[in-house]
Image (cartoon, rainbow, N blue to C red; front, side):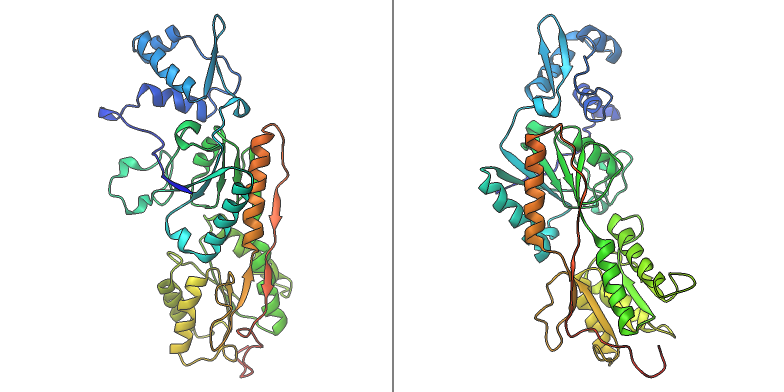
Length: 383
């Protein structure tokens, strides 16, 4: 398995102007020039870009070597369709940062992708997005993107892949759209773009099941620790919890649901938010935590407050990481990560082999695994 760093979307020349090749490349990946379109002549492009014809010719030859365009003597140059571009024999997996690989759930998913790829005699390349929030050089931020989004884009030649599996939701939609213009893309969250295949980890269903289970136990004040509404998984989690709450409430479905948004999914954030929610006058009697790392902080804060699990507080976490925790095992919302990785890989191979075929979105529903950390709420009248 090889690892490839991301390359910036746009390289800027001195003075801030785009290079000729970058201008031409952007017209290809943004859809200004569509598959099978005939390109303007070298003379027309030279006049438009105010450069000599030889310069335009040189850059067009580079794009032709990469397979983005093709030419026929006497006919001109045309935009290549995805199916016309040269094959590399590799599949790419896109993560946001290297910490993803330290996450047991993500590493299991990527390992499963690699196993299926190897069985199909294909290589695997991992692309790590840039953590631009840590950069002070704002000029390196993607056009139209926020500082916390990964910013990278490459041609099929320099990426060295025939298709991409995007396993992060922190890549800007515009970047995903541009990637899908160069290679088949399988994405784990829904975006309003054509030519992208979706296999969605159904966060809404998982949070609905977790919330509904707590409601059935008798809980009516439930805290949800999840991402903000600008994140697709955060929106899905909130919607799943809201729908479940609405199934037992005649009024506002969000009544009784306390939502907390972490700055990042870390143990420290889980600890901080739990201290905050425990300080509320009518605190929640159950917590649904959208990440196992945050759950460790949640458990620490509950323990420091002298509360017992599940007698005083029920806890549900995501992923099957805390199944052997002592003295209390943790009820968890779990995806079959091995199966998910296999599905991602098989689907992207199908997209590579059949670039003109449209695939219906597929939703992978998680399983709620009941363990010792959930029970009826306290019977002291705080319900």
